[in-house]
Image (cartoon, rainbow, N blue to C red; front, side, top):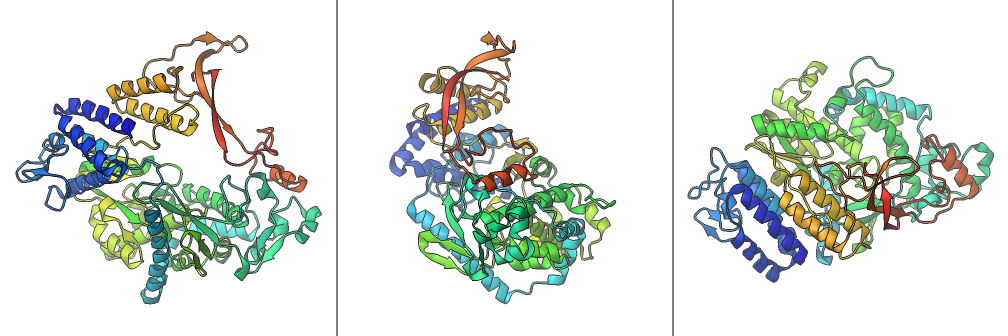
Length: 609
């Protein structure tokens, strides 16, 4: 933990120099609180201080409900007071007419630096997260029983936005043109690597639309494989396995591992769906694809640019939803796709309907949520549902039915990336009301539309100035053998360098070279080795005899792919699937596959670019 407090000290001192103040007392207070409270002060209490600070920027003042647990002088906390007094009036707590942008960044950096460190939560917090997952299912059932969901309006607006995409997907499913694929991740039925190409399970729901013989074997010459596969009736289908992964020390992230056979066909639907959602004109059409202007899956920059603009002129609001993925009800999806039966059937066939929560011993037999994080279709489906909900809210605000012309007028004013939502400020009240009526919950602590602060897709802005903090993702490594820790620390160093925190970067360089990587040269960001990002040019240490290219002595991370062999039929299927552009790009792909089991770091002569 000392390395973390030392890093905080270096950051505080450098930022104090930027803002012409002192952080000596702040550092002493931090050491005292860490001694009494442990790691939780850095990872929970400090981020909570930062959230209160963001709320003060939103409200334009500091009041008595903010910064509890910290002593005050006048209207402001003593902790980080040197910065806060350059942002808020000391006596009234009202934000200054021209607050210091450097001080705003400093407070955010010093409070958020450890907010998302990947450290396991306590057992109690993990259990609470799983209980919360089950509680959401109860909330969805209550909403279903008591809602006045206007199916026709929801279907009408979603069709206005996405009808070209839905029609194209309907055609692809009807013509059996979807191409399945496997991902590298874990599955509920514990299949990994190349084993996934020898599927032994399939479901009746899949078989009715995606026959095993058409999708899971090389061709019908191998139809004898049907004797080895078990076609599961709906009651016998594998449930998703609900697990947790690190998110913050305050709460873990809850995801659901899908069975391999389900994941395989979800990917078949996913790729053409995302491709057509982002296409400006869907294949087979001449008119523009309206939905493509409002949703994104591969590029977060439009969201960040719009958040920056909203922070400057106040025209755009950024909204965030709590438990967004888990609150998309199957009724939302049914309403959206009801006029496209083949696509709807494909989405339903590839949707898991049961969940196992082993940590708390709960079995959910008939899920009302469409899908949890872990399903390949979770992200695009939720984006379309949220976009539809947003435009229903805009329609309520306008008090007139939407047309293509009206929707097109909101290009550059509405954007949805996952649960990061950007809308015009004048529509906020109606959009929030619509989202709430549809069963969603707006996270008001992370939604902004009043002040000059906005955040979306990892970009944070105040009055158009970037105030995004650099965050530590892993504990500091103690040796070079902790490859993930070393790579994370180097990434942190490089981000701090690009942020202009050069004194802190110099201190980190001393830690890295002195304890971990004696060879740590300047390299380009695209270099295959572990090195320093710099505005200075790299210095070649030798010229390769064979290629006459410059080389530097540096450490190279090499992932160790686990051994994994498929049968002959499974190997053939892997090689001929159209998704593999070059089946021989990795000569060991039939004997080793899956996510790396470990990463080795070796000293090599490497390219600096």
